[in-house]
Length: 165
Image 1: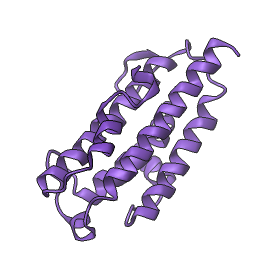
Image 2 (image 1 turned 30 degrees about the vertical axis):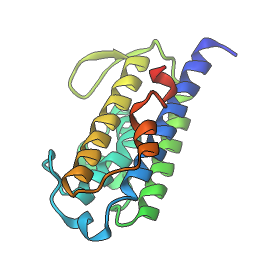
Image 3 (image 1 turned 180 degrees about the horizontal axis):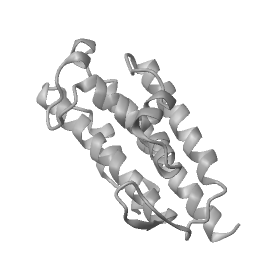
Image 4 (image 1 turned 120 degrees about the vertical axis):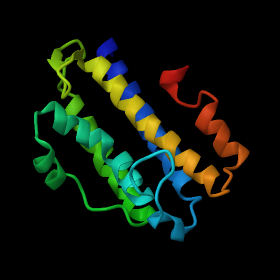
């Protein structure tokens, strides 16, 4: 197996594991909190969850040069339940996986901000973007006095993700 295929598989595995942990975090929210304003974000909690779920697909659409209005139409419906969130994660990560497969990791392009990036650097930025919002979700849990189990915390922070090893 080539190094490029291995790196792509590691990125995809990391993304899928991060989404699974995020889903488990969100499952801790009492349902009435989903409509409340999010702390540490200018979005409400439901919008934060929706945005986080669609980050991988959104990043690919940005890479393809879609404008924000067209992108909104391409992204799925609002995330209103845990099942919606799981479906959004699955659709978004599958779209990302099939879209990244043919790309050369060393290929360079200009991102939405005009910076030149390799596909590999862009993938790392996408993962960072996802983790940033997952951290906001975690902080919102703490703000609502919901404390994840030590097992979930160890998955969240203790190097569970392969790309962090």
